Length: 104
Ligand code: SF4
Image 1: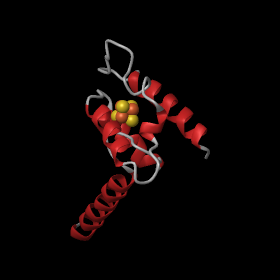
Image 2: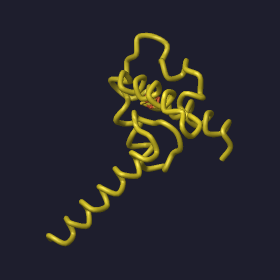
Image 3: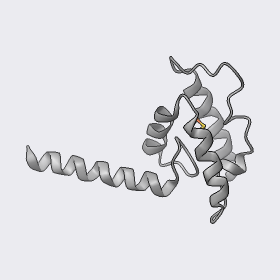
């Protein structure tokens, strides 16, 4: 998937998420107004990643966005998390599910 395709996908998902009940921004969504470079930072651009995460923290659909990103294996910053953080969340969930099966 090209960078442009990722950006278009993010915009499409954002529109979907903002249509969820309770997602009332009352203004132009901040994510859609932000330079896409911020949400797909080059390696080592921690400053950009932090900026994106700060925007996500104010986003009313952050949790739904994070779940979509976890399901889809997205690149970039989604739901206030980096790819590395999402890998850890997926690993924790796999371990919890495994422990649940072993306990049953
Ligand atoms: S949580 Fe972040 S990436 Fe997801 S829609 Fe909101 S601002 Fe965009």
